[in-house]
Length: 238
Image 1: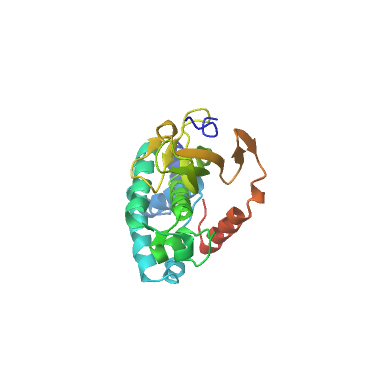
Image 2 (image 1 turned 90 degrees about the vertical axis):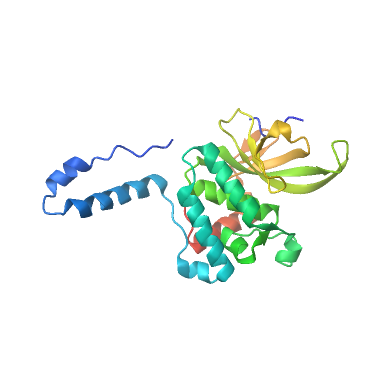
């Protein structure tokens, strides 16, 4: 079954460092150039990460996973395809799956990546949130990725038994079939190859999509808004 819901580089600006250096002869060039490039990168990515002090509040396991996660971000590929793979592999290999009732003693908890690192486990939403945040920090265009609620068919293709599930969808362009990042399987597959998933609705920081219709009233997703506030408090910015 084709997902109806689903089928709907930034390059650094040319650094004008030469004229600036010519005007600032008093500055040592070896010190000034890295500073200028740092400001250029900051303006392009517009992102930041939590401090080590913030991470430490979540415990030693969080610190270890956070540092490994930083290494993954720093060494991730330059193409979206490679970034998707690197991020998907990291979370699927390093985080264990567990229900919210086991991890957080409640049925519907939306965990930040730091909270997930502290526990070392997450439900499907925790995996998707971690992957979404990672790809945003890596510079993947925000209009290409959506958190997507689906019904996952259990017991084979002819089964009528489903359960609520969430995956991350990546759209190379708005009308192209998306790729799905799922904690249930290790590979990233096109939506058409996942007949076990029935789309319900999807969303990101800007919009909600229901049955192919886009709505900008994303603030009505209370849990999502609360999560974004938590991310900001922890020091995430993207």
